Amino acid sequence: MPDDYVAAAQLSGCSILGFSDHCPYPKDGRNTWADVRMAPEESDRYIAAIRAAGEHSAFPVYAGFECEYDRCYVNWYRDELKGRLGADYLVFGPHWVAAGNEMLYAPELSTQEEVHRYFDGVIEGIQSGLFAFVAHPDLIMASGRCWDRELQACFEAVIDAAVSCRVPLEINGLGLARRMVPGEHGLRHPYPVDEFWQIVVRKGAAVICNADAHRPGDVIKNAQLARDYASRFGIIPVETVF
Image (cartoon, rainbow, N blue to C red; front, top):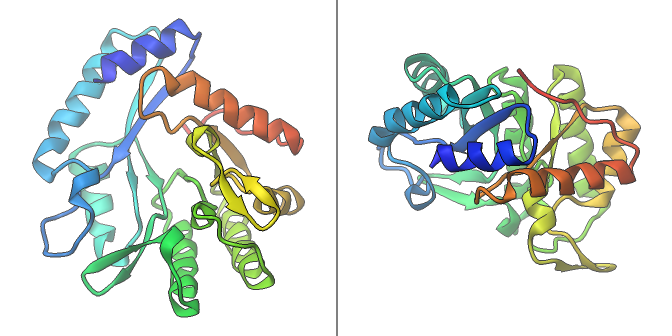
């Protein structure tokens, strides 16, 4: 419950807290991974619970959603999530690329065409103006995908879009807490991936450090992991998107 996260954050000296659970999608026959997100009819209770938790908090508490991007849902993001439900912000979590009514998970993409469509969608999502920041922008590397020139070019285009649109890129603390994966140079974090963040530094993109906490006890712990990772690259993250 939101109260548990607020209490854990308060014990750790938190000064601001934002919630961004996986957003609901309309029941339109597409496989939008209903097993990992709330149903549309649960969204009012979700927002209400966060607002109630904020009333008893010593610091500001914000209500948001983590969304994928698909142009067919632009009105849903804008009119339902931000409009009717009054979400304070939306996070762009580029988890998938659409293949008809199915959504293909980014780390499992296998063809060049799928990978390029995925990156095109990430750039379009950044340029949409809907999102406060991009969560785990290097998620596609999570299964141990090897870095190569083609991927670097795709990532550079994503970073250029983020710089142009002034959309921060997230160092994700949950990825740093997860089990390491085999990469071409030995074990590495599933994300963040060093090669990506070296380019972020070179291009001067804004960076935000985030916990991606799935348990109350990870709110501050994972955020600190992200900050420690940022310090390795001399990154000074933005403090808030509000």
